[in-house]
Length: 219
Image (cartoon, rainbow, N blue to C red):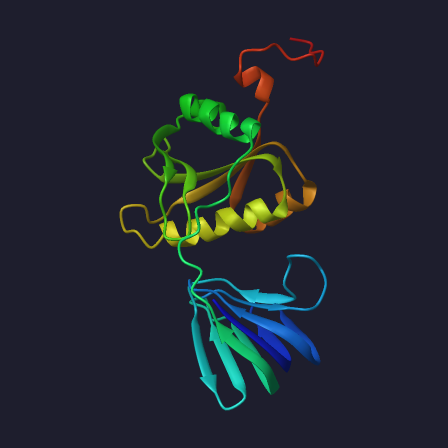
């Protein structure tokens, strides 16, 4: 990973246009090619970013990042204050808590609780940026990548998006679609998922375990 602290301005052109005026920011270039621009605040979310795969070209004082879709992120650097690179090695991935791990196990044993016609290919299907929780095939034979969370938030949708980008490079999986599964999914996460053609499914943990729900129903 490369970390650069610089006074810079940033311009994005693609589905819309956006401009960040001159200021001191952290530029992060990850090993997979993802480029993110951070301010000193705002928790984990960058001010702007370009997911891999993309192409980064550095010229005198200007970084130009281009995506396969023709989007461009232009970083104009006035002054570099710090520039360093670190090899972080292979990340073991996020260790799920007990409920989340068991939820994944239950869904792997009953994929049709997610969508009718789904057949499990493998749990923890490997990619070069971490394992996908479940890889399935639907009734048409299309590959389906499924990310399972206890609580569905925006970062989970972002995680699944990155997996889909990697899986779609495999000709045996190309055309892969995504499903984001959780006990509850926040409205913002649903909006982001819909914008990326990712389906959202909420499941009842107790029902999957064979425990009858306390929610009153007509039928």
